[in-house]
Length: 237
Image (tube, rainbow, N blue to C red; front, top):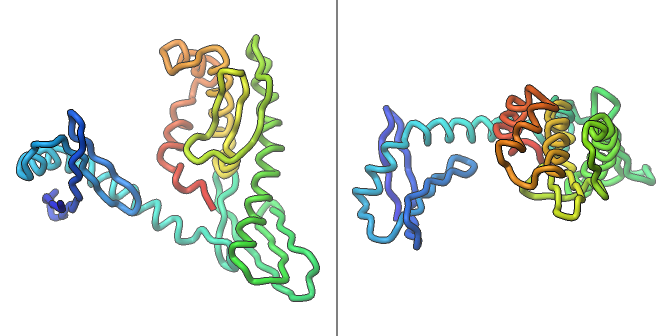
């Protein structure tokens, strides 16, 4: 069922899905698609009334997703495109020559350079990911050494790997895994993720004691946490 409500001069359209749940939930996904999960028995009028009370919040979220979408338009592995690295956008240079024997990719400090004998976006994307993974391992391991001495306990293993939904993970076996995409974030945000996971070696939850641990090591962690929350969707190829 599709409904809509007004917020100022803007119309907010949303899809209603009835679920076996006690409360109403509003989900917003890129590019500003609004879905309302409703308990069974709520009438369309009741649902609309509740959504209207959250219209201001919904409008802000839609604007945020539109901003993310606009920023992503420049993000492409092509001549004239840009890629994110340590929180900044850098231009992409594609050197195409059928005589090249190998595909290579490097970040020179101010530009991403791809040398390729084939014009294949999928291949270039895999090449870019390989570059990111390599640099992520180097930088994360370096930054990790900066903070690990502040703790009386150490992880058994640290690894940079594919993670869809988390920037870092600390397991009950004291293994710490980092998402390779975090290399696209500013260095301070990377440090925050490292400190976050190190604190999980001591506290396996997000209790007050856990956050006190994070704040003791990194007093300004909240702004880095917020940066990741606001810009996380940009950290992808």
